[in-house]
Image (cartoon, rainbow, N blue to C red; front, side, top):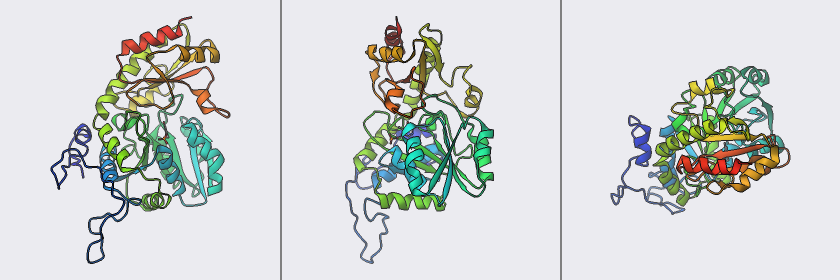
Length: 380
Ligand SMILES: *Cc1c(COP(=O)(O)O)cnc(C)c1O
C-alpha cells in the first residue's frame, strides 16, 4: 500500500513505491498466474485464489489509483465502459438514476437504450443547472446521480459539491466520471462524491496502448462490495499485462497532464480570435459558462480537452480535420499524441453533438507545431 503521507507525484512516479520482496525489483513484476496455491490448512492467507476475482498486478494499479483519488480503495476493469456499467448493474433495483444530457456518448446510449432491461431508469438533465438536478431526484428511488465534468464533447462543468449535497439529501449516491479532469486537476471524493469513475484508457495510462477502467470508492460499503462481486462474476477484469502498462503510464501522469493542460490553454487562446472559428469551448476561457465553477473545483488547470465550432459549419469542420498533418485524425483522448476528430461523425445517429464541432485532445508535441498545423488546416 502506498504511503498516503507522500505527495501524489511521488506515489505515481514509484508505481506505489513497493519493491518486489522476492527479487528487489523496483519495477513491479507482471503476475500472469491465473491461479494461486492454497495453504495446507485449506485457507488462502496470501489473499489470492483465482485471477478473475483478483490479480496482484491489478491490485498494485488499484492501490495507486486509490491513493491519487484519496479513496478507500479502487477497482480496475477491462475498460471504462466495463467500470461504468458494472457500477450501474451493482445498484439496488428498481433503480432510478439521474445522468447528464451532455456525457460520454457510448454510456449515454447504454443508459438510454439498454439499461431498462436491467431495471435501471434514467432521467437525463442539464447537470450544469443544480435546480434541474434537484427537480429530477426522486426521494428513495434515485440510487445514483452520475456526473461527468468536464463533459464530452462540450466540456460542460457541473458543480460536484452542490450536487453531492442534493444527491445525499435524496438518499442517492454521487458518481463522477473524472476521466477528463484526472486526479491531478480534480478530487471528486474530497468534494463529496461517493465514487470516481475513470476511463483509464485516457490520461491515467496516457499512451493510447491500453484499454482500462477504474472505480475509486470513498468507503467500503454495500455498493462497493457488490461492484467487486459483479466484476468477478462478469469477468470484466483488467489483464495483468494491461495493468502493468497502466502502472507504467501513471508514473508520468502529473508531468503529462500539466504539460498537456498548458498546451490546451495556449491553443484555446490562439483559436479564440481566429476568423474561421465561431466558438472555442474550453473551461479555461473566461467567457465559458462553467468557468467560475471550474476555477473553484479544478486545481492547476482546466484540462487538456477543447472543442472548436467552425464558422463554415459541418463541411468546414470535416475539411479542416482532413487537412491536419501533425494532429492525428482519431477518436479517444488523453494520449501523448494530439488527436482531432469530427465528433458528430463518431457519435452517429442520435448524437447531440453540433455538426460544426471538432474535438481536440492536446498531447505532448511542441505547441507551436500544433498551432501552425491547425492554422494551416483552418486557412480558407
Ligand atoms: C472513453 C471514455 C469512457 C469509456 O471508456 P473506455 O475505456 O473507452 O471503455 C467513459 N467516459 C469518458 C469521459 C471517456 O472519455
